[in-house]
Length: 605
Image (cartoon, rainbow, N blue to C red):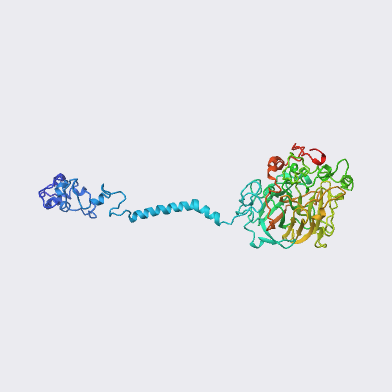
């Protein structure tokens, strides 16, 4: 519709200048609009509806009268305000908190510190204290409150291994496995019932462990053929792991390095050693109790010889000797003397007694020659070597075939005819119905003191699979030294060192029970050297399983470590490290091309 009678709306500029007049307040006078102005203002597309305001109603614009009722002049002077910069107002302190005439450390109300400042300062002090506690206090508190490991007669902190590795095994333990039950931390001696304490344990509770070089702080598997005993298998680290809470060594019919079988050998050589005490293992033997051919063993050797590394063993194994006489020389004889060394020896070698090259690190070693030491008070070297004491070597023998373990020590130099002084005082067999002296007493490479004992027939892998405890306790040295062997958790037999006394026939002196730091070896293999091998009936693969290995020592005679002060090994091993790490070096003077130390008894000094 048309609105002829209404005025056309004024342009919006008409409302930009508001009447002004001297006012008694800061507000300008309100402007009154006509109705026509209001109507036309909001019916035109160019009206003030384009002016935005947060106070506009939902779709309902304010009238211009409402909008301009409280409009202010753009000039603050018209509001009656004093804009002078020198004007002092009551709230100036709020905007000028630090006037020039007040020190910086005084608060607005005249106090040195405010609560807010105290809180800030306190927070900083707490933060500093927390950082100090974390990086200084915590290590100090841990040091003084932790259960410190002694070196237990070993060397280095906590008796760590000879290579200096820190023991970090999956599961996180050191010399004593935290899985070892508390009741196993002490044990009475089999000899005199005195209390012994646990110094090393491995419970093998963590599955999937491996034993390649560098994998484990205490155990290492070898990768070689054990040619010394003509084994049929190759020893490979992949054959050894942990499973079901046990160490598992597998012997399988598997082509490895051109051999038809694969087995495993691991040891603590140069990592964990002990001198004296008691070692035991809880074992399930491989295969069946009536099938011959398997050769499972747990045994120990002096740290100066490494099992499987021929150059390190030549002239060291199986000597245990600290005298300077004919017992230290090659073939245990000079120009056919003594006569006992030339007859009544090994029947397979023309009756000769010894093919050993002589004790390389003997008491006869000339001054200035290479020797690990130490020295006697008379200026001679302590005779050193790599003796062997076997916890057990399991076999199947007899008629009918019966499971047995040979528990023995190997010796050099030898008695005439390999016959030691095995009187009833020196060879004590606890139960003759279970244990008898071994018919093997030695050969040109070793003399053996050995007794065989029947095993628990159920404790084989393919029988009931039960576990049985084996071990030996020994006191090193001369005089009252001894070795007592344990089979099925019962004493089997004891050797008293008087049985290894001097032998006038071969002109040798007393041989001590090993005084060397001894390391632990566990292996599973096969060899015709050890007995009949029934390959047709062995149920490959077979497994030697070890539930745990524990070592105890008298509380007042703790002596662990591979480099003890009285019988050091580390410096010598480091000097000739290749002999201990290269299995292809089979001899000391030949393959390794090292000089044999000069011998005073031979007049070489």
